[in-house]
Image (cartoon, rainbow, N blue to C red; front, side, top):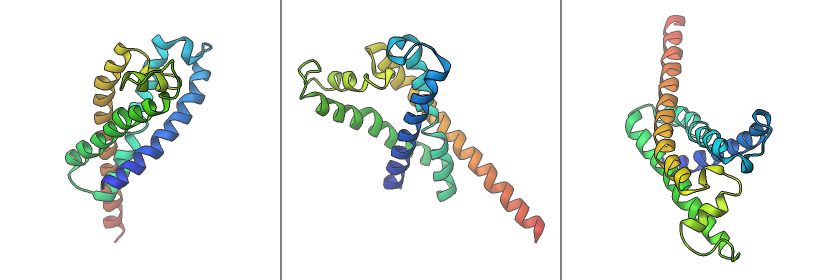
Length: 162
């Protein structure tokens, strides 16, 4: 389950990055790196919802039981990947450049800030860690609820047909 959660999270994270990067320009005439007061909210909400909602539905349709434990496990894996591993990889990437430094996690945030505005500044990062994780938990749970309702509807339809 952990391996599947990692792959699903990675795939949905990449898909969310592409959707968010292309759609922000349609909503705002100001580039994301010049309007971080607004863009960090937009990016943070989309990365907290679009990555976890379909993952909740897919994992619940695969497992079909214990949605709360599944939610805690999968969102915990996503949290570790996004907010620890990606920041550490950003730190490693930034060590070759003197302007980023070698200070974990600050230099990792600076590298990630180039493309993801929710990592730009201490207040943004703290808010994204707290509220983004809460939104991810809610999104994943609603994904399990939607999948559960779809499964129940298909079972009811099968019973009616037979």
